[in-house]
Length: 306
Image (cartoon, rainbow, N blue to C red; front, side, top):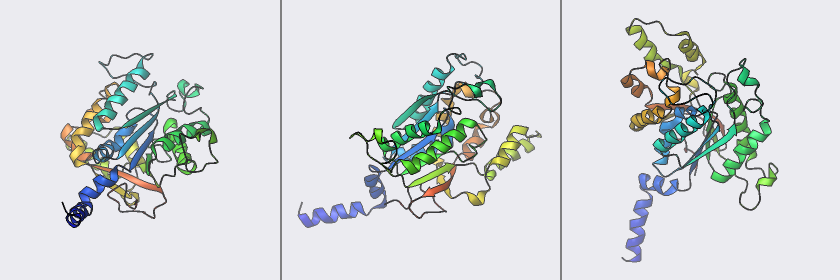
């Protein structure tokens, strides 16, 4: 092949948008920072979508979800639940193609006012700077341009969600500064500055389909669902909408890995599968911090990143 022909052929490939994303994806990295197994489900479609484009995908899960009800038929006890839920988390991550899964060793805190919340081993009671240091280490290892975590209210006020939200924000600003956690900079790691931080959030309109379904069935919406709907965000503050329609079925398969959390009273068990698949075709996020200038109307988490 002559040099001019070779150049023209490769130039045509490079400026093809699909080839360009595939070519660039080897350098792109996406990291989600959460508290419990199943928290990742809010962006499981996006993780799957970007993983299949060659993006380096990472989930950090701070606890093993040791506190909580065990769904009927699941072979777990309160003593073994953490181990079972770690296995479920690994199953879910494998389903969506996540490349790296980090499990920290904090204990699930339970809700405020419960005895478990006072356990000094839990995430809620942990020193926040120490939690942030662990998140920073993973950021420096995996070098994400994009990070995702909970909003400041943790979705519904869970103390673990709020704690890991704080740690993720601290890591976003600290990981690129060599003055923080200098013991990590031992020649293997170097400072790394993420470019965008998102909150995965629920839009209020997302609940309308289910509420309409209940009304059509002559059923009264449960109080917990009505409360959750009021905590979701108005649609006009959603900055980013990711089309994951092609991954809706995969999201379902990934969710089903979390069998110990899918009891008969859970939201998923009360929604017809066809309605659930339709509701999860789009994932919504709010761009919280950005070093790129991007602000709204995004359909790609890596918009604005060269």
